[in-house]
Image 1 (tube, helix red, strand yellow):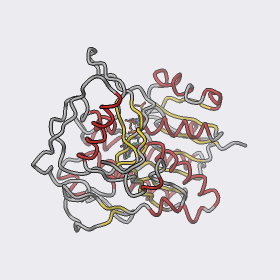
Image 2 (cartoon, rainbow, N blue to C red):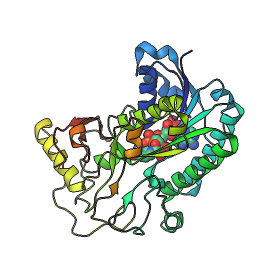
Image 3 (tube, rainbow, N blue to C red):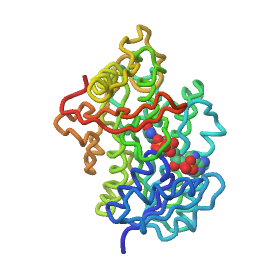
Image 4 (cartoon, helix red, strand yellow):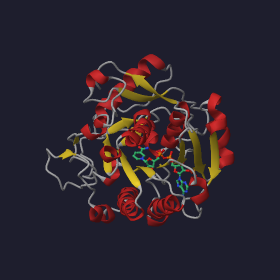
Length: 355
Ligand SMILES: NC(=O)c1ccc[n+]([C@@H]2O[C@H](COP(=O)([O-])OP(=O)(O)OC[C@H]3O[C@@H](n4cnc5c(N)ncnc54)[C@H](OP(=O)(O)O)[C@@H]3O)[C@@H](O)[C@H]2O)c1
């Protein structure tokens, strides 16, 4: 019997890549979205030869009973969660993330699903607001400072922190095997047509919205590596559950400065576009507020050795420069005449480090 997986949120940036990978590996895939009519055709086109193995199901994290959707699944990969920052509040971000996680675990228990792979985030790990020493190395042992997150009204990070804590409690309560993925900002090939929040961070350096380069660094990782981490955690867990489950997995490919990112984008633009792109060249003399990870302008130090133990290479494109990001993400088409900037994003392969 082929493995049956349910991926919540297959319509999203990470979810779609995970759907694609699971189909390529021969899994039978169910995926959920609130709007199947919007997403079904393009999701089925991801791996046309395996389209018959994919079912797209309507589900809302807050209102759907997932029991029948999950029945017969070997694993649920729970990626669905609201990810937006502007206009975020407790009701529209924290509640669906936390209550959605509860809903998913209750349904897994009712449907006897043995295993959950949860998409958490470094948002649940490195929301420190300056409360760590400058040489602190981020690992799975770290948790965000929830009180500081609330005080700064950082609702997305609150949502990921509370949802992950709840997941651990429910996994214990229902005796479900759980592995948690903690990726940092994810960049990479966008399978969905709409721009998601993390890809938007790059676009802001290309469309004129940023006039100065932020004087700080950003931990980033590729979307293919994060999707693969979800799958490998499940596959390795089938072989050695004691090694894999009950663990968080920090997923970071590198921590470039925004100046390095801007340089990479400028280099790419020179050789790939005839349209001059308004990429900023001057670093903001002011430091941004202290928030996630190391105090600006320092790079956040991190240790991804646990992910490596299950075969995840968070810098898979360029293993020779493991400690730096080996890829950049760029816009290949900008239609300046239309109201909506049309973007098509892909990874640019670098053989050398950032900058
Ligand atoms: N992108 C990153 O940099 C990053 C980094 C770390 C962790 N993550 C985590 O990775 C996951 C996916 O992020 P993404 O960047 O791929 O986001 P995305 O493109 O915005 O996708 C979000 C997904 O969540 C679903 N969703 C949101 N609210 C929902 C609700 N109330 N009911 C049902 N489904 C809902 C959406 O489905 P609909 O089709 O119904 O809208 C969509 O499939 C999230 O858990 C996020 O926290 C992302």
